[in-house]
Image (cartoon, rainbow, N blue to C red; front, side):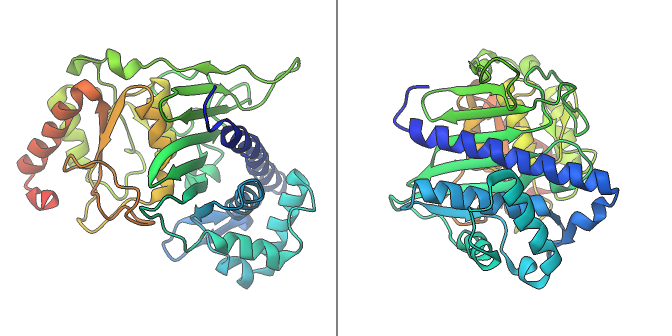
Length: 363
């Protein structure tokens, strides 16, 4: 890909491959020890955190920070848990050293400072470039050796300009329906990447013998969807937690779209399957009006779908505002669909909310 972000793209792809090795090593170690629970930690929000989350956030921040020292960084994790758990901290240092060398961090304090450097920064409307990371999107499925993603985004002035997503368990030849336990039989995995205005690309994560993997540009398949019969859904149904199930199903029924279609826990894998064409529509309405998405689950990954012809707004039809903060408090929920069908899907969301007596979620 020839663009002004070529250096950033190459650096992000390179570190994403190392991050994927970290994730694979953590899984392999847990499996060998047959004590995968020892790799888990419960945060205040009750989501599991693994060695890989901390190790990958530290790796991404330090590596890209060394290359682009003027940029800012946003990540999901803080180092508080590591400071309180020396055994966990030791494991994080060990896996980083194994996969990226033992000179990346001076000591444990250095690693914790790097993690914390992106734990409080929030995006703004200025010109400063901000990298956004989700070290492991789908930690609940990750510890079950199911679909997960490593998400890297670059924002400039609050606008997505670059995306690199590593999916170590997704095949480049995947077809619908994709669910959490759809695992690449070859073990090679996938990298998706995009630069705004230059399209989205796909290539294997791991190379075979004979040189680096070849990439191919994804077609703008969403441009070809012109009627409701062309819609294909991706949602989170089997592990539904924060969403309004009757609305998601009701929208699909109104549009006569097979439901659930692709069924994935992680948001980044959902955006990925929309990019590759296994789906082209998703709707998400939170159960509570004060529930907001987190920037690292969506920034960059949304660009993949936009670069194949998709349109993304919130439930009110507003553009997603990535300058609002670490939580996307300027938006409520998501409606994504091919551009020519987006208004139809949005109307179905509003009609279904009213039919289910949930108009308050539109306020």
